[in-house]
Amino acid sequence: MRGGVEVDAGRIRFGRMAATMKACDDALMKADAALAKLLANPLKAAIDGSAEPRLRLETGASETLLLVGHPTHESRYGPATVMFLEVAAQRTPCSMPPMRMATCLQVRDRVYDANGLLVGTPGEWRAFAGEIEGYAHRAGERNVLRVKRFERSNPPADASRFVYVLDLVVESEVVQR
Image 1 (spheres, rainbow, N blue to C red):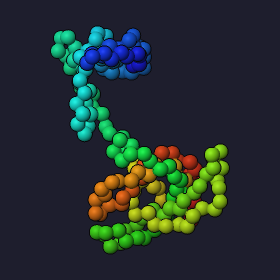
Image 2: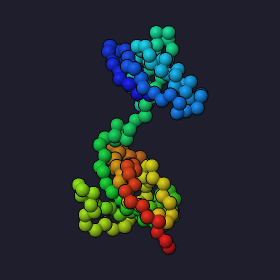
Image 3: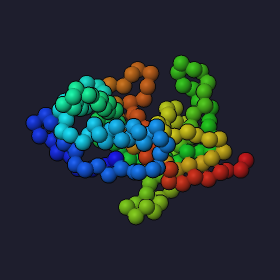
Image 4: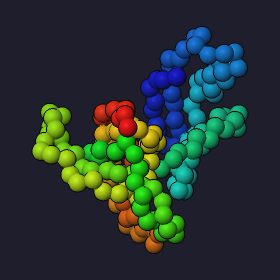
């Protein structure tokens, strides 16, 4: 569903909503129709500013719709640094407390210009002890990733001060051994 919205003094009014007519099974279409009916009249709106923000919409008949938000990485850590990492096809042994021996991703920095063209030579391979949120490494597959790197203001003692989040897989190649 989509449509215009007006907010005024704690009340919210949705304009005429556009929605699909037959794209889902009956149960979902019924839920869609019930939601459209709920949004057809002005609603009282209140925001709870907790860690997981909540928008409570209430009809004149005291029916309530509670929408729960999830903080973005930007809202938790501030602006990101966008960078490119090449991930090797195989993991490498590394030491990662509290485990003595583990396997880590092997990564190296890549640099692209404003036109998306590779600049210079890739950096040196290094063990990457952390994880990249949203990225699942597959043995035998080399990837170039565009990641967002966020800096934690108070990192836990056993964690990196950086949080890496996958933004885009730029290049992927299956590597034969």
